[in-house]
Image 1 (cartoon, rainbow, N blue to C red):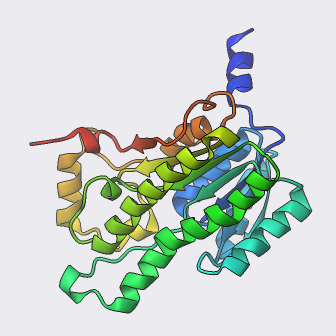
Image 2: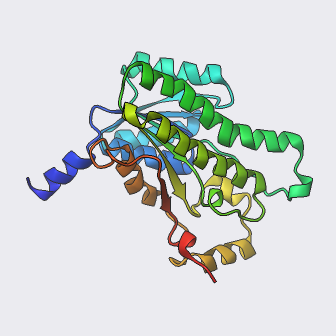
Image 3: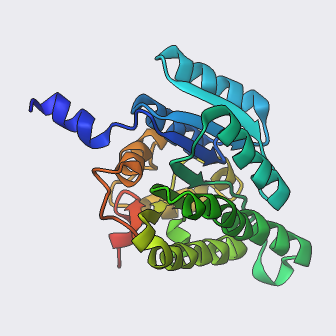
Length: 262
């Protein structure tokens, strides 16, 4: 088999349907483009249709397929409606990405209860709900699947200024490993994709010049990541062939940040 044909066979997602919750955001939207370029039909779940339209136009420009479904990740009913819509329009779901997220730089002693609950609900409880809703479908249909939950480098090591965010992402990492154990014998793979520092909207809220310098000093690559640099890891985790024996891992994409010490 020629090299190009071998790689296409290994990572080809033709005939697959991928639901990307948070797909209207910068990172997950770029990951959706990568999945579409690999042949998957992508469903962007999110709150901002204007952002979805721009991303879908990009996907359609190279002949990819996709559509947008509004979803409120804090509502189980909305997640059920998302699944029902996708099954009605596409007939199946093969890949689920949970990437909705929010952040805040509020100092710990000043965090109000409602802010804490909002971040936990969006970053953690939403993943729990979506994994239940879509996981029930995968289990009932005996359908092999790949679930990719977006974690964070702050879920591995706590970072200053983002207490609630770090705690919520650490819990996502743990939830993912538990589900990987629970569903491995059902051919449902569950992994955490762990970005380092990327130009996501939620990062901009907590970045000032001094923090940027601190991050770059801690990152051997001496730069922030580009969203496109998450695509390779996404395809590996999504692919039935390339990632068939990968479950319960934390796939870190961070320019060496995690490896750095004094």
